[in-house]
Image (cartoon, rainbow, N blue to C red; front, top):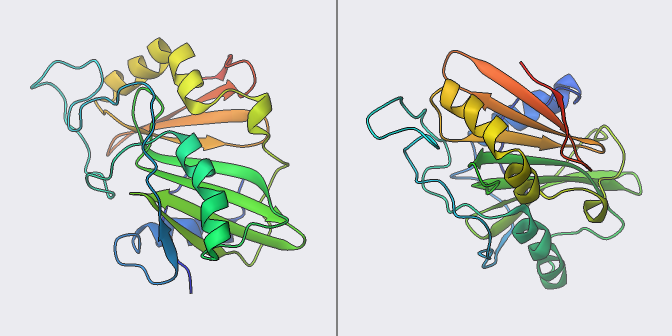
Length: 216
C-alpha cells in the first residue's frame, strides 16, 4: 500500500476523492508504502520566513499550525523533475499517465510549496503522487480524476503566477493574517485558496495568462 496526504477544498472532485484526500493528510507523517528520496531543491524566488505572514510586521497576526511542520519548500518543477528517476528506480509507475491535476500545500508568496501532489491518469488507471521533503509516494485511486490534461509547457508555473500576481495574493494573505496558502491547478485555471481558522477566500486565475478570473 502506497500512501500520502493532502488537504481539502478541491471543488470539482467527486465526494469520494475529496474525503480520501482529506483523510490522507493525517497519515502523511507516518504512512506506509514505497517511497523514493530525491534532492528536490533548486533555484527560485526566496520563500517567505516561516511563522511570519508575508508582508506583515513582526508581532502582528497569527499563523495557523501547518500539518507538514518544517518541510522545506520547493517549486513544482522539483516534483515533476523527480518523477523520471523514481520511475527508473521502480519505486513508482507513471508509464502511460498524463498530468491532470496539481495541488500545492503550504505555499508561500513566491509559489514554493511544502508538498506537491500530482494527479495523473491514463490507460484506465488514476494515481496520485506526493512530493515532500525530497520523497515521492504513490497512491492508486479507485475513481477517475476530473478534467483534461495539464500541459505545463503551455501555462504559467506557480512561481510565474505568484510573481505576476504577487500584490493580489499577498494582500489577501495579509487580510487573513496568514503566511501560507493552498493551490489547485487544473486544465485551465489556478485556484489560490487562502484560509485562516475561521475564514477562507479563493482567487481564480487563468493558467495561461495569469489574469484574475474570480475573487472574493
